[in-house]
Image 1: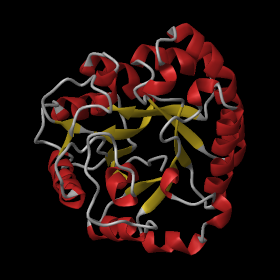
Image 2 (image 1 turned 30 degrees about the vertical axis):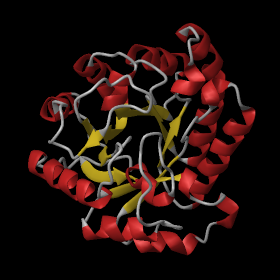
Image 3 (image 1 turned 120 degrees about the vertical axis):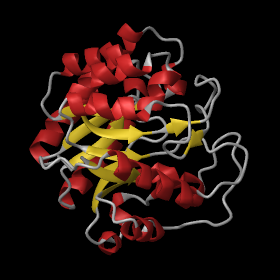
Image 4 (image 1 turned 60 degrees about the vertical axis):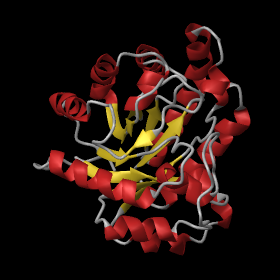
Length: 287
């Protein structure tokens, strides 16, 4: 397993302040500080959120050199992804970023189908039916580009619904990005959801959180791995039993009403992961 971080963990530093959060004391205008932090931690990989980048046509490709030996993949879809399959413009934007990722030599890109806001109270069957065709089109493009798409459970789909959607699309270029706390946000049982999704998962967003209702808007307040209420060792054991060999990325959602040090939280989380993944998996990863 590879250890990394999803760039959304730094969202306040990029100026994205979620409801209930306080702004960070500094503002980043490019990913160079993120890459510098990743290098200082000797991370295997970084998922770079495209929402914090200019358009692909405006990006200076030299910025990626700052990542050094750290592998980089793009993470597309914040906040509303494909808007539940309602937006052809969102689909076109995803395709544009896929082409850019392939030009950079990437082999994986994380995407989202929607968000709690785009899901609303719509029956799951309607949402799945509407998403199947655009996801199949994007998967066809991904296959031609040599990409694997990792579709996240983005607090819009329950685990069983996501499995049904992938079965409808039925494409080898489409896999899963598993977010354990997002399972709780939609009412899934944590370990049942992990067990169901793990065999199709290529990337994990691993989160811990403080006590509280996981269904609150924006999700529960994130915590440094190992300091919250989530049974993280059980999740890692379930992934291992499913022969998962991809990337486990530290990610934070809501950081709560108090000022926090994201970098220190990431550092503590990476230390926790390294202690609990003492034996690295020698099998190749898709990232």
